[in-house]
Length: 385
Image (tube, rainbow, N blue to C red; front, side, top):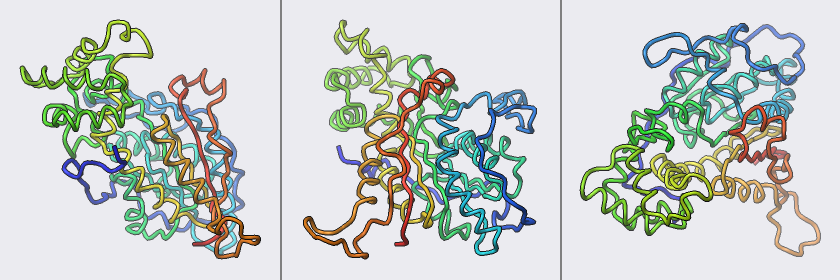
């Protein structure tokens, strides 16, 4: 299956600025603080509490969300932001811009803003619940924060709308947030029975249940085999088609039962939960994740300022492969093989900051077991386009 989403399922919305003020507002210059790694979030430091679904005010987003490889990401991105802050304080440029294209609950963004005091944030997310939590978490940074309800492949449109020609650092964290995993009603988890939604933006597009009940067998096969790499695809698709003919499939519990019965008994206790790959495939299809990733990578590279860095956290090979290929291509020259001297016009405009994908260390894994599959790649622009 190609990396393009099915056009019949695709939908788009214009970016909607939902919080923050003009990020270009001036501040009184002073010597910048070192971009040090921040300490762990503490509710006593001013992080507001998030509103729970019943309207309560007793959930701290810092406790809900542990950012994956936070300290390493701050270390790598603050290098470019610190250089840009020096230029800003010298009067030679505007305030540095950090774009978090998958803001989530704002854990990475909070760390960047704490470490680089003259940097402004453009936070993009399609999940309105996450944006609400992030807004509360980042409120103490005031005018330095602008949050936008959009998909990350609208990055260029968002920057244009805010008057930013370039970004000094960009982060994409492609994994599900703790909010999406832990809230049963979102339908992402196969461990609890809940409505099959799986939309990252619950205001837009068909749900996983709608996809399951309307897609033909060929389309379901493409989704499960392509995005889930499910070796029992044919068995599972036949079982889904049979089950939905009797009654619509509307909950995760129904789907888990169908999958479990469809696969061989011996396979039900091997390789993790039997529904894991099917749920991954449906989530990717519902949210057009691979299509948006293919679009945002060249956009982000194009909008990166000279000296700026672009970091991507991926969690499985389907996500990591296009990032790896795009970064390798961007950091390579365009000269024909065998040319003794590479002309200036053909020299690479980017350099790889990480050699291969960095993985979480033991300390990170102990603190945040959900980071186990994370792969971090970072690239830096060294020459203008």
